Amino acid sequence: MPTYAIGDIQGCGDEFEALLARLKFDPASDSLWLVGDLINRGPRSLDVLRKVRLLGDSVVTVLGNHDLHLLAVALTGAKQKRQDTLANILDAPDRDELVHWLRHRPVLHHDALLGYTMIHAGLPPQWDGATAIACARELETVLRDERQCIELLQQMYGDQPDRWSDSLRGVERLRFITNCLTRLRFCYEDGRLALPYKGTLEKAPAGLLPWFRMPQRRSRDLRIVFGHWSALGYYDADGVMNLDTGCVWGSRLTAVRLDQKATPQFVECGSSGLKPDS
Image (cartoon, rainbow, N blue to C red; front, side):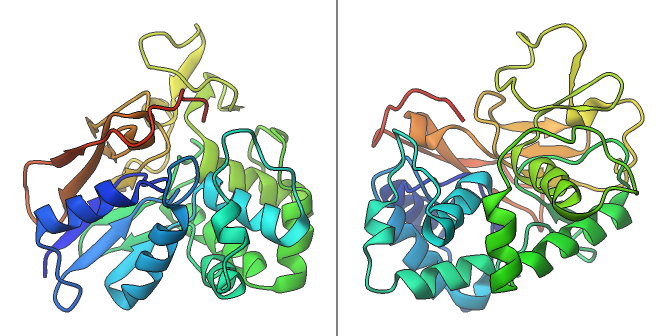
């Protein structure tokens, strides 16, 4: 069965449809993995959300930071950012159904037979594969409970705590898990999360390492597919594969076939040209 993975779409519906056509994707026989950030900043966020939902069980999508931001805006009234393009979703007649569907997506998908694990952003060096899966399930359980979901979304934003401990509890534990799986790019050499820096490897400040090059990273036995890092671009090394190639910023949307060694396929993008900020 062909299994394709596609990078951050962020509301770029034209490019998403063009890439599916290039892949000759057939939901009756093929599988599609999406690394999160289906929506926001691009012009067709509502269309993308509806299309992915209608593709049903042929698609697995993990939640990204923009997807969680939509949930926070929709369910708690969180403030929108200047470049957000969430209005069509928030005003849609099927808004509640879409929000409910989104709340029930995973934050980590592991396929032992295929040999890949998909997340949106990163893993802290202290987590092995089993810990990552267990922490993801903790967060998913909260997101799928309406009361607990709202409580988390109200306290989700923030960079602390920045170091993992098994003793973390409550919202601090959930915020750390959320930040790793949906926001992480770099760590400090001592293993703390370095969330503010969003740039390239070459220009990273001294003392920062990409999460996947941390010397003591305990998840090295996993082959990880992720997104979230448009400044990194397509990257296939160190046991990880980044598929965020900055479509919403006017670059391109990327797909790879996971069940066999194949050349990545790209669709050039021109629908936005926004200035990258997240």
